[in-house]
Amino acid sequence: MKCKKCGSEVEKGDKFCLNCGKPIEDSRVSMNSPNYTQNKYQNMNTKTPLGLSSFVLAIISFFLPVPYMDIGVGIAAIVFAIFALSKEVRRGFAIAGLVIGIISMLLAIGLLMENGYDDLFDQMTIVITRFFIV
Image (cartoon, rainbow, N blue to C red; front, side, top):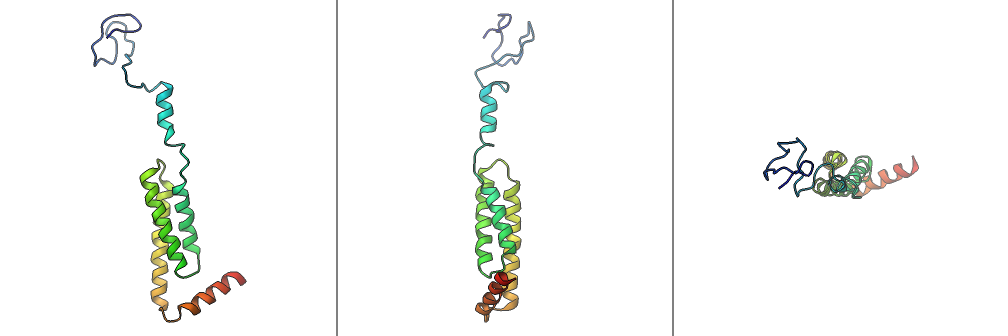
């Protein structure tokens, strides 16, 4: 292989020309080439809002006053978070959605266990009427 600047022979593993000091570009994509920056940011610009969706669902689940529905929304938030953690580069919303979704599900299950299952329909009716009236 030859140096592109001075034309002297360069070994295959060398990163710089020993004669002139110019960096040697091999067949791989260099960091300064447009292809490198395009590939580097290509995954970050993909429109997969799974993490944000997980976060929004988890917040809705946390504040949703309807029994069983908050558990279902919490499960959806956790599933979206798991998919987002496996596919997205930026994971902040996915982690937040996972944590809040688990907390809201635990709180909802705890409230259901504390109040009992006997008068669940009555509780749902009261909660729904309070939600829409207030």
